Length: 416
Image 1 (cartoon, rainbow, N blue to C red):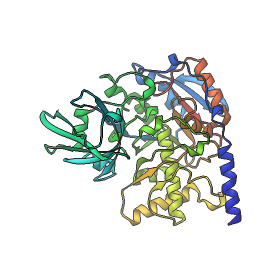
Image 2: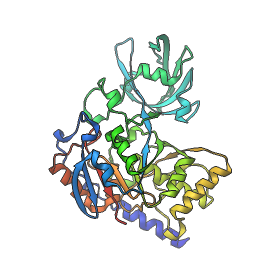
Image 3: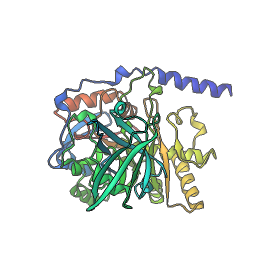
Image 4: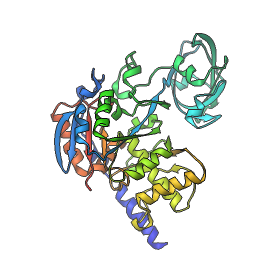
């Protein structure tokens, strides 16, 4: 027990010694891509491998992937999660749907509810919306008028009750009512083309409030080229939350609040991963965080800690290496559990926080865009490639790359 306590103190000392100012950079406003490229796969692609950097175009990606690569995509779909309501006083209240709470927390199921539900929300102009006030509006859903009432379920926790008539699914209601919530750093209103351009071409499962933006570069032509080369693809679902844009405002990075996000894995994905160990390349930080979370779920099963899929923010860090199963053992523990329970998919929650000092378990490379200075995602990239993250970002800035959600891309390989 004494050794365990020292080990935990050692990693905490290292983590709390992280100086956030060392993970920032100067991002000129004009380098933020406020609109996408006209043709998705014509964006720039920086490739980092073995310390070397080259510059290509995104449609060159298939030629730069080994044939045994398994690309893993996040097929979440952004919902029109931002809605505005006008009170009789004229005050406008903005709601941004974050996560369902009642009658279910399972996002796919919450989209099918037909009369009422409770969601955690970000509330704009909350001081003008008091407990007991009911917001009402009437909207046309698939040509049918539907009356919607919105009230607090829990004022302090920002839980909002939405009730409507007509028996329409909540997803249809949201699509008729809301708008796509663009990232705040774009500093512009949502426009009609964003409904298409802020979705990946493979988006399938509704529930995200932000796009997995590394996937925005993929086109049917790129997928066709991947298939011709024999590169395998697989899919998971992580419903990206608004917490992805939350800046780190605390001195100790370990105290930063990581919002929990819902993730769904299929049995097929687990099999694909087992067959492709050492060749797994996630598309985007959401896919990477999901895959690493899957390993740690396998750890929990392997160690017989629990069958609940919930990965806490700092769960990975206190372990000694000899305590942990190999990636193969962890994934096979998951496969065995799913088979025993006759499960074709697992729904979990993760708030995993990846920063320098983290040891990656499943991911050999990553396709990712360029992230905000001093953000959790910069810390993740720095953990993945080490100090060379600064050189990568300097190269991108010096070569006219476009940054953030609608910006250009990179393919980063981790040292073996």
